Image 1 (tube, helix red, strand yellow):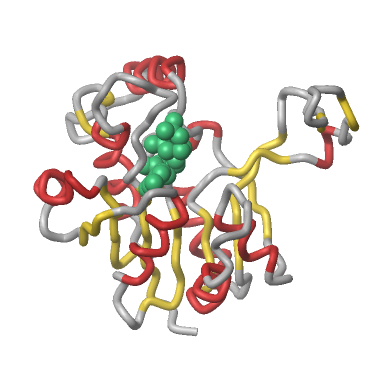
Image 2 (image 1 turned 60 degrees about the horizontal axis):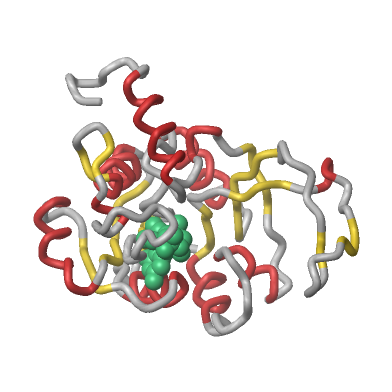
Length: 229
Ligand code: CTP
Ligand code: MG
């Protein structure tokens, strides 16, 4: 396996649950776009040597200007899986390890990026950061009746970055029509083992308006780094 690590950042979503008009990736958090924060965190890892961003197709140039010449920007697709596939194809040929990281997780700590990449480089073909759940989860039927209550201590909430050997992720994406909601789901369908490592609370996804309030509050309480929050 080539040990060069690249990252792909799906950022082409509309942010419908967040609302507010502007595509979510460009929504500012304490004055700076979420996507820029996510990309800077990836680039701050000494392990990551290339970043490819899938942007809303009409905003490829705008996103390119925001991120600067060190980041490749490609037009995203209709669904997240399409955006990831397009960005994967734009990685340099010699990238052997891929991190897939949502633009919508702007406060992800750099040490989580390093932990995921290191675990793949240590020989795990697929690695995901996870956290225990706080709410109980029910499985329901089409009528909304409860079918089952899985024991909570066996369940985990899944974050990004998710890390993969590139050949494994490429094979997984050949099956991208499967109804899965994360990249590791496609890898599981191949029968490849997926390793979990501890996630980070700050790596939460900005999905609804209250998440934006939380992210702003966390930034307001953080110690400024290089004069920037
Ligand atoms: N994403 C993407 N291309 C799409 C859809 C989503 O690149 N066609 C990206 C989003 O930009 C985001 C990540 O996938 O960084 C996670 O998706 P989500 O949080 O669902 O973002 P949106 O799809 O933008 O939000 P919503 O589902 O509320 O519209
Ligand atoms: Mg979405």
